[in-house]
Image 1 (cartoon, rainbow, N blue to C red):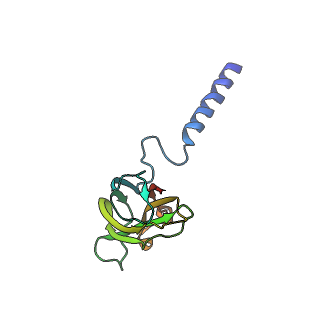
Image 2 (cartoon, one colour; image 1 turned 45 degrees about the horizontal axis):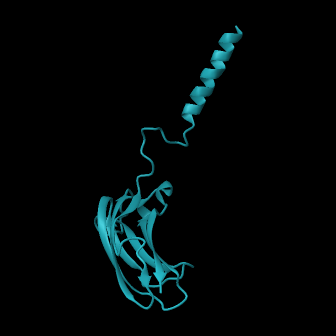
Image 3 (cartoon, rainbow, N blue to C red; image 1 turned 180 degrees about the horizontal axis):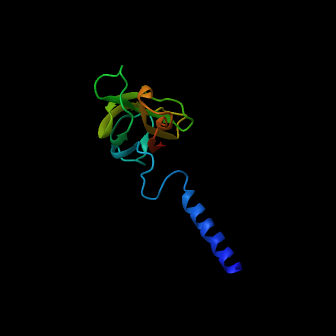
Length: 154
């Protein structure tokens, strides 16, 4: 009898543990929205010279799952933002934005940077996917991002 009770408890624990995977089954995809850098020039990690002018151009791949709302232009579902900041988070250049459609895609963004002569040791370039809020459920309103980093040399 004790053996049967122990077996029942073990089966119950295994069943409960298998069902507690944070709301995702092993075969279900995680959150569908993402953004990644496919290519970037200059390459990530390249040392930038002080007082130089640099054009940073990147192609990013993304997946945007929110549907456009009634006020968006046909097919528009979000924005990709490119920001260039120093190691303290201070903006070094004008933010570049690109409107994207729902679904998978790629986009090219380019920004100009005048590297300061002093006070900057690192430049971070961040790409953020911003969904069209009115077309998203509350669970979809997170902003996937990716970044490249450049040390500043002398």
